[in-house]
Image (cartoon, rainbow, N blue to C red):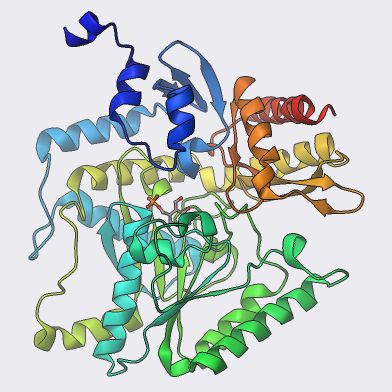
Length: 463
Ligand SMILES: Cc1ncc(COP(=O)(O)O)c(C=O)c1O
C-alpha cells in the first residue's frame, strides 16, 4: 500500500534502503540499481525484461549455469526435510557428511591431494580464509611454537574482506580507510610477469627474483615467526594473473625449508574453473590447507570451507583431549540445505564433465580473443587458463605504455559491453577486463561474448 501511495519503484526502494557491497555510494545514488529477476543457462534478465549474457558467472561462481532444476529440487527437498540444524557439538546431517566425503574424494582422486583429511564448513570465501588464519595460529600453538604466527600473501591477491582475509588481500582499494592490513600479514610482490617484470627480464629471471624476495623476507623476519603462505593458484580479482614459468616450483621448496604452511585459496579456481577440478591439481600443488567457496554450490547457496591435511589434522586430534572443544565455527557451518545443493551441483559438474569442458571451451575462448583482438592497439595481453580469461588494456601496445588504473578505461569498456548485453568485470588492481562464464557456455555464446567485447572496445577507443 505504502509503495503504491508513494509510487515508489523497486529501484527507488533499493536506493532508499539497501547498503550495497562493493559499490560506489555516490554512483548508486545517481544511477540506482539494476534489479535482476531471473536467469537460465548463461543469460540473466532484469525486472524490465532486459537480458545479458553473463560472461562472469555472477561473481566467478555459477559454474553449472543458471536455472538448474537439479539444484533447485535438491534444495527444496532439503528445506522440506531439515530446513536447519547446526553442526556444533557433534551434531550433523546426512547432506553435510556426504558433501564433505564427496569433496575429499574429488580432491584425492581428481587433483592428487591424497593427503586431505577433513573438511571444515563455513559460508563465504572470507570466512574460509579467516578460518585458515586462525587455524595456523592454533596449529602452531599446539606445536609449541607461539612465535610462528605471521602470514605471507601476495600483492594483487584477493582473499576476501573480513578483518583477517581483507588483510591477506593485497589490493590497496580493500585496505583504504579500513586500517588494514592488520599486524602480522606480510605481502610479497605480485607474480605477474607482463605487469611487473623489469624491461627485458625473462619469465625465468622474474620468477628467480620473486623467489629471492621470498627468501630475503623470511631471512629478515625469521622463519620461526612465519606460519603460512596464502596463494590463489591463479589470481582472480587481481586481474586473472597466471603464475610465471616455474613459480610454484621455486616458491614451494622455500616454504617447506622453513616449515611454512601452504594455503591454496581455491575460492575461484576450484570446481572446474581452470579446466581441472582444482587449481592445485592443475599446477601440481600439495597444499596443507585448501579453502573453497563459490563453485562448490555454483553460488546457489552460501557454502564455503577448508580442507585440512592429515598432518595438521593429526596434531589437532592428538591435542584434543587436553584442548577440549575446537572453539571456532559458524551457526550455518555445514548447513544441511547447502550440503544437499553442493552435492547436487558436484553431481552436475561430474556427470556433464564440466571441468574438462571448461578446458576445451576455454581454449576456444582464448583463441577467439587472440583472433579478434590480438592486434588491437589497446589490448596489451590476452591470457587465460580454462574458463578464466582476461584482456589487459594498455595506453599504447607498441610502446607498452600502461594505463593508470585510476583512468578507468577498462571500466568504460565493461560499461560499454554491459550496454551491448554482455557482462564482463573491470578489475580493481590492474586495467583488466575479466571473463569467467558458466562452464556450460557454448562456442556460439563465446563468439557472442567476444564480438560484443570487441564492439565495446571500439565504442571506447574508436577501434
Ligand atoms: C580467491 C578468493 N578468495 C576469497 C574470496 C572471498 O569470498 P567471499 O566474497 O565469499 O567472502 C573471493 C571472492 O571473490 C575470491 O575470489
